[in-house]
Length: 322
Image 1 (spheres, rainbow, N blue to C red):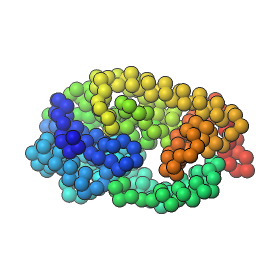
Image 2 (spheres, rainbow, N blue to C red):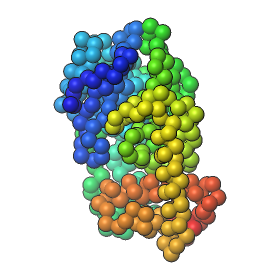
Image 3 (cartoon, one colour):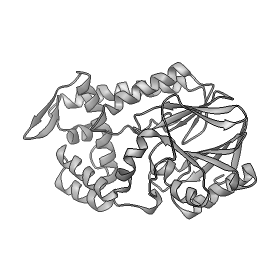
Image 4 (tube, one colour):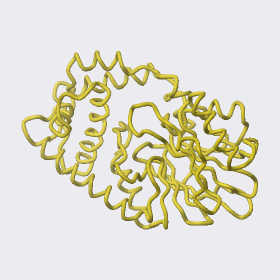
């Protein structure tokens, strides 16, 4: 039930918080007991109701939300860190995120600039003018997204976050779903707090990133989880998984199949990303779903181009693949 702190053993508790109707119904937040108090991993969206539910869950675990010593957010997405600023304003605690977050706070908070970027991206990759107009109208800032704040403690790959009493969380930088994404390995149990890097029922969304091969980064990050093969994986959405390496392999296989489908579509008559997206995902998506599908299509096209499996060319200044 939402708002109940569910004990998972070894001082780990799951608090499930409701999400807006945009994807998964809930997000998992984890309260971990350490020698110096509670560490919270992810905090949900920025709504008063869910913040109150979260605080009640912390009280169930620690007796007093003042026991909260640190908040760790796995990545810069609103369903995992949207409530961070509000929570920290009333409950001062160390705030931990990947070091790359510091340079992206202004970008996250510039919702108008983000919307304009997405509209331009759709236009540049073959989206019809009607679609770009609809996108501009619906892709507005919602209060539940909250505002990003820089971490008081930026961390990088391999860093240890001490929880007291000899317990620590080891940071694994796992970009792909988001360039700031981190996973955490619990020293006491070996369990992996996976955020959105590995999910039990769905494959995490891997968006286009103009500055890097986002899908290539994601596949490399999954290989690390295959090698680690944790005894248990605690995801950001859905139920816990025994192991984790096998699921990582399944997700890698999914993307290899998606790459084959995208390459086949791009070598047909349609070579712009919007046309490839329509062939892969089907036409007639709503504006928000269309831009998400385009971003994922682009991440696959860019990976194919960067690895030499497709050519990328420009016609009248617009990118085409084939």
